[in-house]
Image (cartoon, rainbow over all chains, first blue to last red; front, side, top):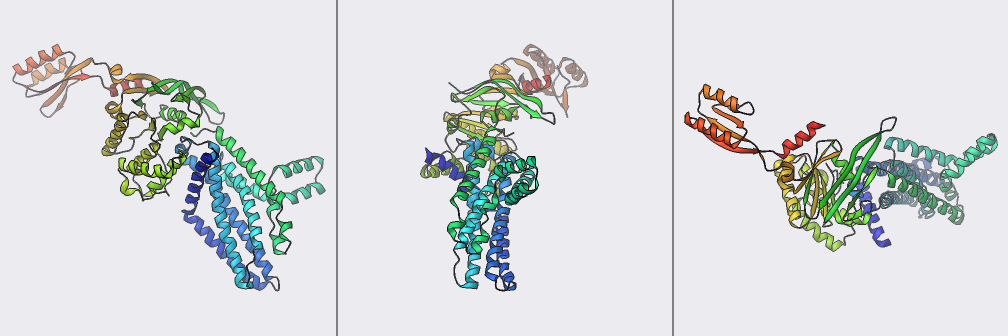
Length: 260
Length: 308
């Protein structure tokens, strides 16, 4: 039974992946990202003594930025495009549950992101290999956490895509991304400067919104903190549960909507 | 045996700023029987597509229920026995024809070996074997309609629901689709299709339902709807003088139509037709054609539309 359900999800996953990889825009973004990662080599020559750290820090930053761009700009159209172009009619009329469709689309984009993040990470590692003569596999841990963050961001984009237009979805998702990155600072600000009501509001937001800062371990990786301390099981669990919650909510909305 | 049934099916949408309720389908009661071709005829905006979307579980009814093969249409399992082609379909244009059919075959859980064989048969049946490796973005409208039909048949369904399958096709394409529908009927399939093209319905349907402004106004076989009564006799004649011409104008139930020397007119009964022919032949005129005029589906359709 699980196999039967999964085979349909994997059909949608692979179709979504095919759609992404047959789109030239993705290649343009990827080429630009790799060019930007390559440019860190020039920046490293300026930073006296701290060149290797600059390459790693800015390189991982670019992987995160371009990964987020792909997640947001493909994610916001992921479901909406299917409804807008009416391809959804031929899917929902088949023996497939709506949640399977959502899951398949989501996993298709995650697969796309996985491939892109992997290519970008290896490009960065290759650059370091050229400059320093060894493969820095610690970067894989950092990019793994970036991927986990992207999974949450994609979940948010897909959620909005299920009931909103791409433009609004982009605004909402990027807002969530920005707030999610600044959530720890926001809480700190609330604890120090806000009144009791403001503190309560900020605390609610803190626990409700995704704390994306938790996935940002680039600084730790760059500064040689042991991997065991950088990649926490709790963070992985937090990210995974957040993704499950987002997909459950998306499926619930999608289950009840009419495709007019 | 009834394969598709709706009971009191009603759909309302909320529109505008105040979310006003607009009823687009009123209390639809319909039954399609095993092995028949049912034509769902209606003008644009009558509620045909809404009905089909309700049947396919794309939208939810406000009231009433719909079932296919005895199971509620929301039951995902029943969809394994159903094929559906939406109106003016847009497909994944980055896929080739073959990839496209494989994708839909996977959604039915058809094993790869069976799927491959079925796809070859379908590509052959819809005449797209040579275009199987082309991306759909390179397909013409007719080719897209045909590959759409192929995806609707990938699971060898018992019940086939087609939304405007001949719309936008040229006469050759329309005939091919009609032939395909008749072939499916010969193989015992039940076909429910919507259209606003009256001749398509007349040519291939066993039963017809006419929907106007969201209400099913007529349903039955063509014979039941149109009867076999003769409404009048149409006569085509030429070679007479002006005096005879004015006499014809008095007899005709509608103003005579003249093309060159030839005049087309109609009388009410066969008796009147015999008298007119005797009169014309007696004055040296030529009678080219005499044929009884029966009520057509188009007449009935236009009459029902005019009532609203």
